[in-house]
Length: 263
Image (cartoon, rainbow, N blue to C red; front, side):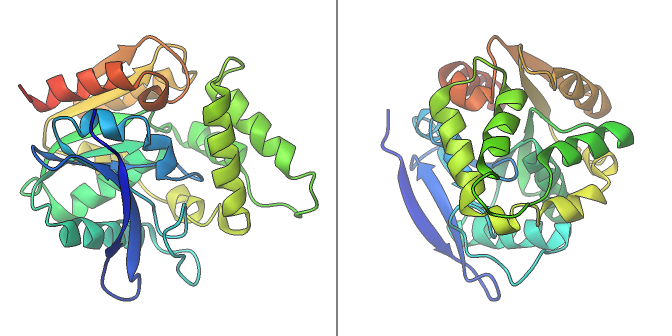
């Protein structure tokens, strides 16, 4: 397995830099977008797997992980635009795009801005709900920052444990917990524009081969089924729980490799 590395990608003002974890120097480009409110650390198990046969780059959204924060919340299209600037700076003219949870909506917005001339394949992992009421509940469960008095920590741990199941990998829970705390005062910034974003219309407009991946034990699996139906995509269900890219990186990597058509 190739070594995973990290770097800051220089991008135009006002962003200046985007942080990435990456592996691989040959094959297709695969760009990975994390869920909110954590970071590309959730990709640290899948990136070296993909790096054996692709150039895999997991990007920190502006203001998350260790990408510098903008002065305040951006429009959803601006978050996507700043990620496109980073992709351009890497030299990835054509690429596979993969998003997790709200990262799926960001991937759809990137597709809306650059189109099929640049994106060859679209992969949605554990997508958020399409239904308006379910989307509202999904956002409410993530919540908004509360007073930082020490008691704010436990609800974060419990939220990820509910999301990923009581048998969730403790290492992944620690990762999500610490990444959420690192940006606690602004962790909801990207939630605000997502709340008003028409993800259904954006996904419906995707005209490249699409794959939806769910964990068999994920309670959001029905949302994956709905997104697959909307997009006319294959729905790959991998046995396991949590974020399947992390809990079963080899199986998820095999599914991605087969979908992209890498020999």
